[in-house]
Image 1 (tube, rainbow, N blue to C red):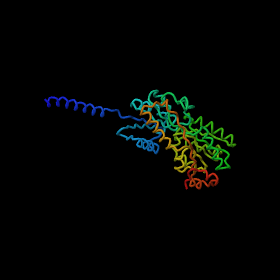
Image 2: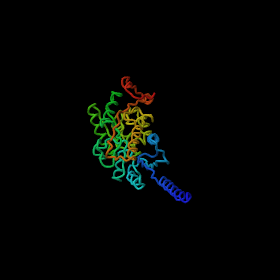
Image 3: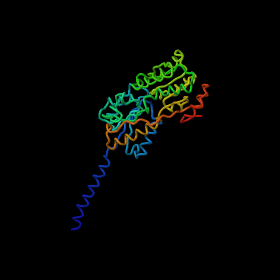
Image 4: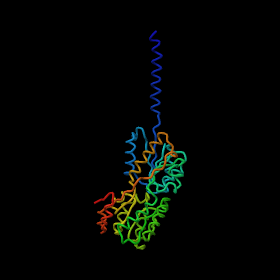
Length: 326
């Protein structure tokens, strides 16, 4: 009697165990698509993955990351964004204004988290910072839109004799229009002549520096654009060779030998993006996640670079630097 009762009960238990095992095997592993204009993973990718691990996401176990790089060709971003959508990713992380716009054009349903976008409202990515709407949110690049102008102010303080500033600008990037406007405004305030030099690809970098002599500019400012990060070593080398005091938006360019930078911590932006991704994977909607601006900007000075071009940094300016590379 007991055997006849135990048999069906055991069978039921085994069947339930099999169903649970099958459910665990077929459980969907979240997939993140990373869309960037660069050529390969860098410190930002490392910071992003480290942030994921801190929240318990392990690549290949409970999360899958699909990287797509445009290798400096922004015209490839729409194609790569569409590819990520076809892969049925759960969220797309876009690492620039052009990348975010390409992702937004590719899908209005897959959540998109942008990183390093100068002004997402003006760029048309979100309706407002507090209420993004749609499927897009993320981390803006600048604490305030006026940061581009502040860089000219710092350049004037470091090099009081400066009268003309050559500005590397990528007109293909919609964020450049915002930065250019603020740069113009600051130039008028400080009595500076600004000469915008268009750089749309790597070849244009050399051409732009050849044009500096014609403009008679005696300083350099570089606007925010992925193209300039990709070609940072070349830009820094040419600026040093031309003995041009230069200010950059990212510390990474100073780490490569540039004179100084003023801007948010780029790696922190990518770490903050992880929080958005985590919330979205747990059910939050981008429309309900306000866009975040970095709280502060870092002022970085490279004394080695200053010495190389024969520039003495005023002590009062040096005291205000957050980081000094000696």
